[in-house]
Image (cartoon, rainbow, N blue to C red; front, side, top):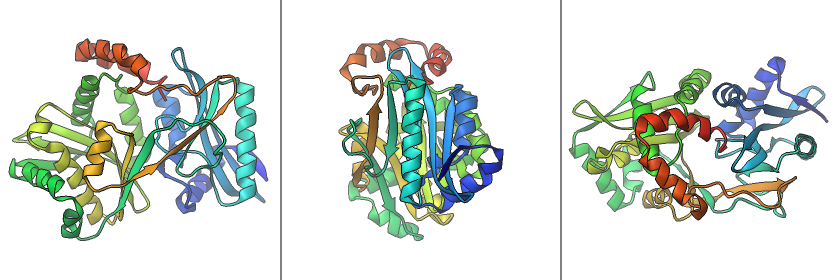
Length: 340
């Protein structure tokens, strides 16, 4: 078993393997190497294991270095899933060993795998994260009836309010809604360059759906498509979104349109336990599935808890919320690149 770094010759085989491997996700695609390097300036290490010239496993990794949270080697920063995707045990062992040796040589604080299933149950974890996935039907009526009654009423409230959804060719309306909402939550915004790069790299597998009311943007969401799955990943809205039940309408429209395209799995994404987004997704009838963010401590003594619910950062969040939005949008990208 030979471990190699991703290069131009391996791009095609890498993506073909990811498409076929049951353990692989959208976030194992080779395009994330370019996204992380160009949008955030991160140093990447995309490793693959080959046997007789054939890929049997992939492991995308990137370094994140932060003054607040230290350094880490993560699979994969800014992505909810990652870790090893392999078709043989020997490939997994080879990649795992290579990643641990790389983490040691880079002298990072810790190595982190963002797994859907546990691989190293004895490693420390970043606990409390879950994901929400559900099968969807080709028939929109079946999907509508599967939504619990209270939430279904909210979707129909948005319809009655006259909300309209449409796919956007650009990111202008999306970024306006997203950045306004992120600022409201007190979190540094990702730069516009990041979203533009994502769309450029993933093409038709990345769509933006915008919801408007009488021509005024209310909410918008960026979704990813992988195999038969749709993943509404980045979303946000203005203050009027709650008034018109725009979030419910928006995520329904993503589901409806995706089912028409042939998608049969709706991935509502990651949430922190007992957060607002966690409750929202539960109310849609989705059941939480634990995520296993396993960390191998290298130089760090403990796993950093760099999430907004950490009481340590509440004062910083409140300070960020007071910044004028244009200022926050300028400073945000410089800070968000170190969050991972």
